[in-house]
Length: 170
Image (cartoon, rainbow, N blue to C red; front, top):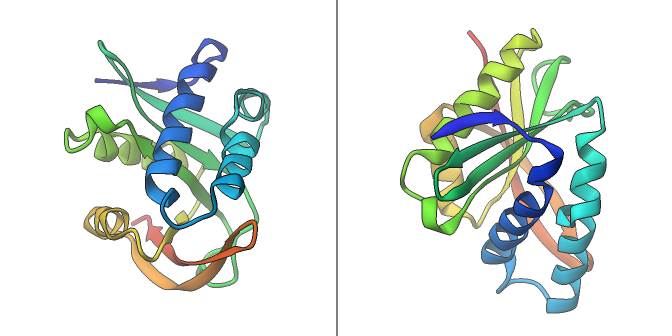
């Protein structure tokens, strides 16, 4: 498993992986048209290519001989009020391909995200995760994140409740 920064020639594979992971997580809980629009808007190739050019976004990829195993997207964004720091980085996405789950890929990606954020000299990492995604909240808690409260997430007209989670650096 190799952890590296994303390149332009990774965009198609990144789009497939992120789209598939998002649909796997939310597919049964949201209308199909809303889900399709969201996936095209946020995980389409043009959206990802545009973000690769953004100074405030960094994608790290976990690559295996068989292909792209997972990705994590870090974003320098406005820190929510619940976060107990003014300088923090958001982990906006962490997705592992179906064929690579339970093989340490998520841990490798989060370790890379933590190191990348530490290099920016921020206080920690924050993220939001769907409250109903027990597999994800469990992963983040095991990694050392703690819940700061709940926030709203809207996918078109469908309302979700997310946990806002925080990982503070020593």
